[in-house]
Amino acid sequence: MFELTADEWEALRLSLKVAFWAMAASLPPGIAVAFLLARGRFWGKLLLDGLVHLPLVLPPVVTGYLLLLVFGRRAPVGSFLADTFGLVFAFRWTGAVLAAAVMGFPLLVRAIRLSIEAIDTRLEEAAGTLGAPPWAVFATITLPLMLPGIIAGMILAFARSLGEFGATITFVSAIPGETETLPTAIYLLLQNPGGDLGALRLTLIAIAVSVAALIGSELLARALARRLGGA
Image (cartoon, rainbow, N blue to C red; front, top):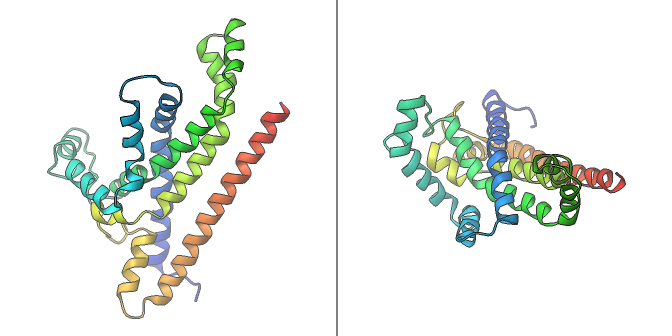
């Protein structure tokens, strides 16, 4: 029952690959946007906050369709990236990464933003009055205090990317070995007679990986909090 076929192993491998790169690609802009939302004072902040969280309230199929309109082979941005850099998203695993990154981005930003807002700014101000330059204050005080939120956000984004279905299948379809991730493989198995057992195997694996990611996030955040509290 629990012996995976070659196609099922490939779907699992591709899912982990897509989730990892979606998380990694989201991290730098996620930190920047979270910092901007937490500390910034500017016109349009509410609009930016709404745009960041829009994938959480939009139907995933709509998000996938919008990605197709922007990054499709004949779309302005998509054709420019393909012609200039040879970077193609539509119906490629890179497109699955983009769709997963967009869907997981709000969770990443929110976790990091909450950790930034919890920082006592008096610590940063004290370091500044003692002569530490801004980059040193960020590296030695702000960033370490942000770490629990960064790690929690990374793992939440990874888990969300691992389970992404609607935007992915709309934007890149379900091509075996190229864009067929765990959720799309489960969906396709359920459409075929006799595919229930394979769908059950992949479902149990998806649950196990997601639960492990969430538990790992909590344990890492607690360990960092204890370490910083005892420093």
